[in-house]
Length: 617
Image 1: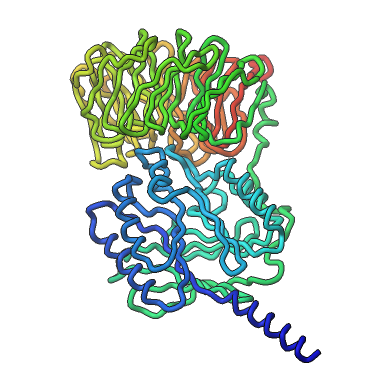
Image 2: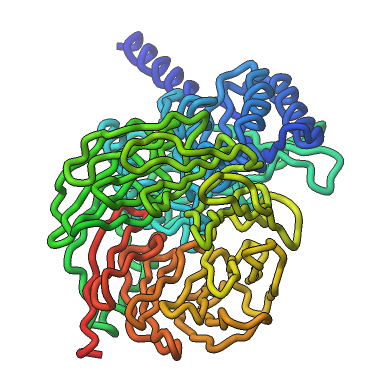
């Protein structure tokens, strides 16, 4: 009996000792290829991790680059590969918002956008928290939430779990934070770790313990640093480990007992009361595709065409939302497709541009590119115009798929929907430039940029509009600009209204519309040679920076926001006619079929048709 008790005590001791380990946690590395300072910061962190006894692995939680480009990611990988231990990594918003590959290069370089592994009885799960390409709040993809549910269901409610994201899972940072916290709440989540804010912050995500950790950058100090994490049988301790200094404790969390309530009662949730205020707006139908959607729907012949994160292009019936067919691609679709003359055209991150039969979805042609294609498509007079990430802009015959011409002078990558106007095709790119090419030959006519230099201020997300010999754009510098279509010279430029990356044109071409970054839509004259505000309307949507355009149809301005709100305004006065909220994620540019019917897509995977009864205001 004594031997049995001794053996049992020995096993228990061994079991408890097995939970003692250390790991390193790095975040917000922000490397740009060719910039030696952040590279030096990471190299010194790697060197110190290798020299610190007991570290068994490392975790990297995003913003590893500054510009999201593959070259910088490969520099990061070359430095992380110097670690003497395994490392696990997820992207941050600098890899997902600014990415010429549509974030696909992250998986090409590092293997995946999420990770899962078990160490000494503790499960670690890391996943992407977005946003993908569009400026918006972070968003966790529906398929990643399903993955969390499925994997946690397999391991059960007893196994301790540590989650890793880049963004904090809270309102204002991740638009569907509640979907994530509700999905993991039944399980034994001990801690959620992340970065983004470049400083230590002890938080709770609907009661679930969380911590944000310091950036690897040195900032104003002589050297950078990372987090040293120590797991014991009953606790996890987070230390700041600056280069060349002793670790300093920044957080401590229990590894035993119940550490948050299993009910979500009392925690904030999105407010859908606006739908009761405007009962005249209904969802005629709504489909949840199960994957993120990054683009607007395309419409032709009573059919709706939508690309999604799975790489599929799906056709739905406008009448009832019934799926008519699906073309299954291999990699995510970012840009908005276009459909006409029984063709639907779209670009893919798999390095192809596709032309499908719009009736049955059969492949008619595809054009190979040298890089992913993130750009939206414009169809005009039997020609498909689209930009890619291989520094080329193409004109393709809609019927045959034959290349008519290409322009290879694009300095950056193209995300926008091109404008065809007065013999020109006009588009922005993430290289600071707005380009004007001859629409028949592809010859460059002019390039425009104004204001601050650098990629982040490019007129690249906005869909340009034109009237009265002027091109209109809004850029990330919060400026609205009018450009002479013939010369490419600035006619006027104003920061009066704090607009950002959204533009719209009235049906009579006398007015332009733009969203401000706080609550309002503004209307300016399209006819004058100076900025003249005609009206401003307080829509009440709060802080806003999503690049969803404003579209006028039959005297109603249709708009949408980063948090699921859609609205209609009187085009002449700006009076709010209606509002409706679907989910809490980015609604892409709306496609009104009439003032009473409007197609929409949302990042959360929703596709739907709104109907508005103006007799019931």
